[in-house]
Amino acid sequence: MSKVQDFNPPWADWPEEQLLNLKMCDLKLRLEGTYVENCIRRVYGELESHGIAFKPLCYLGDEWFSPDNIAAIAIPFYLMHPRLKQLEQKLMLEVEGGSESECLKLLRHETGHAFCHAFQLSRRPQWKTIFGSSSREFNDFYHYQPYSKRFVRHLENCYAQSHPEEDFAETFAVWLSPEEDWKTLYQGWPALSKLFYVDKLVRNLKGRIPGTPPPAKLPFDIRCLRRRLKTHYEQRRKFYSEDDPGFFDSDLYHIFAGRDQAEHGQPASRFLRRERGPLLEVISFWTRERKFTVNRLLRKLMTRCDELKLYLPHDETRAHLEITAYLAALVSNYLFTGKFKGHA
Image 1: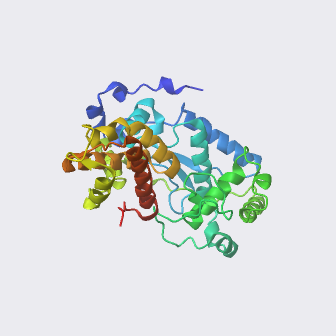
Image 2: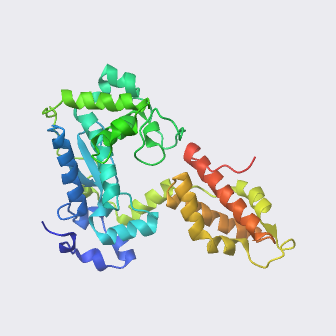
Image 3: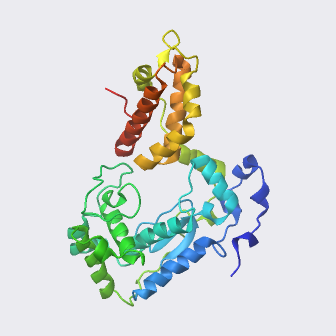
């Protein structure tokens, strides 16, 4: 098998600005020879071990998803080359599927969607009874119960609770994973009945091939996307960012001090820059929110602290504790509602 290093496109050594001006279709990417291809083969093998003849078509798209009513999986283009992973990390602060273990988790999840699409499972009355109506509107922001035992735990943020189709995909992923002893792990949980349903469903569909193959033209196929990388990242960054609202002011005044009240001469923005790394790590870890979102919020607060001419108060330890708690509260509000909410 060829190695990913064998693929040496001319843009690999281009400066960032030049690379960002390249059209996505002109990247001329391929799955062959990448660790992602190995992950796909592994998931195919897992399906075969359960007697499932269906193998979802995998193609390169702009992000992870399984197109509606199509038995296929779009895999993000940036996983195809180290230079693109580097760009994704810099601009979005994380690379979804950047490791083999994370890639496998996402592939199993998307395989659940593709399996559901292939056999139109969400139309079945029993499926609706167990998981709910698939016609429910998708929402990027959802309330979840972190300790609920009615749902399996696979991807972060209790993703199974976001929508009935995600609940099925997550349940399928846990059922499929050879590392999961789901009968033992979920014993006594209401979620176990969902896993047994998937197990029975698969046994009834053993050896069957979907009647409708994927179409020749697939949604957001990288080979057909003519937008530039610059436009792609501008749109993504805008989606995960928030306009600068003024309701931060009273909270920042509470945490920091004006120059006339400050006993230290260090500006609050300098303090936030100094602590940016640890704050970014701890807030992202405990809220499970994207680092990009947390970082954007920190930058907004730094800018606003400069505009308000705020400084670090005498009690630096208290200020550190308060800004950590404040950031966690803001990010949690954003995760649940799509909006940052200041203190009322």
